[in-house]
Image (cartoon, rainbow, N blue to C red; front, side, top):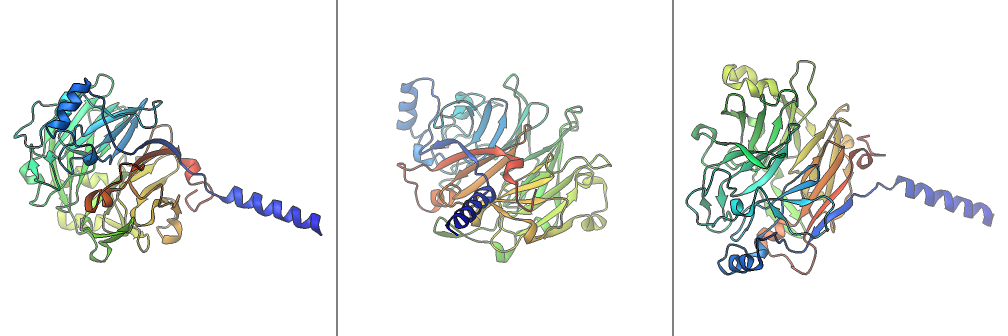
Length: 411
């Protein structure tokens, strides 16, 4: 009997180990963010003049291109030295951020009245790397958001050539693209590497409840509206890291499928303060100015509901696995859904639930090698209280997307 018990125990332990989901690898971690400066004296002067207040710099968005991992630092508060940056993929875990395209283009006074140059960057939440080696940047143009807000410049799309680090184009949104409460904090790009000139960017307006579509070929933009872009009144309450708060953010997360048979993609989308997922064909978004809006209303579809406390910020569709990944703000982890299955709570499992590592998972992307990248910060604590500079506050993780869903309902 003792021998049999021992064998049973070994089998039980082995089963437990094999069923335990793999955890992402910690790639970068910071207590406080610093930057690569031209000289120590420049940093000292920036601190003295209030251009750099270390405690007010919070990483929020990310994207990977070759040996660079881009990291955005929005100007939530005063003293953000550089909003668009990158770190070296094989560099130190706590390496300082390298401003992109340069420190000069990012180090702008919070009280500035205009852009110093056409490639200057004011405040970026998220970026997108396209298959044509271009970095698309949604610059809100708004500095010191939570303090004394200053609209340095109107919201604009900024496109860089990643091979040369040169500005390709900057496009300012039109008055008709915006509403009084508009706020643009995300971007996805619809393009094929064989037709780089025919790119479309989709930018959600979380405050004005719409989506702005931009055509690179036409160099023009237009606004799309729909009821599904609004937030759910009963899904606006959050409790993260012991902090309860209430947000009314509308459409926020956009994710694009592979091209369908007709050449267009499906855009999956949801409001930040919502537990429901929707979809629409990009054919409608691209041709919105020419179609019957009343008839088009029914082309927006409800996929389903993820269940209680499943509000999500960022999402990303991995074409290799047909899985939609999304952050789980209230549940300290990542959610996923295999697009070949019905959209139900059972088919939307929670991955990597760990409040100490993933207090507020703010962004995620899957790169062209099939690696899932995650950025975790402590945004609610940063906004409503303060961060402890003696503990790790910002983390970036990575793992193979296929490993992330192994053994789950998303596989």
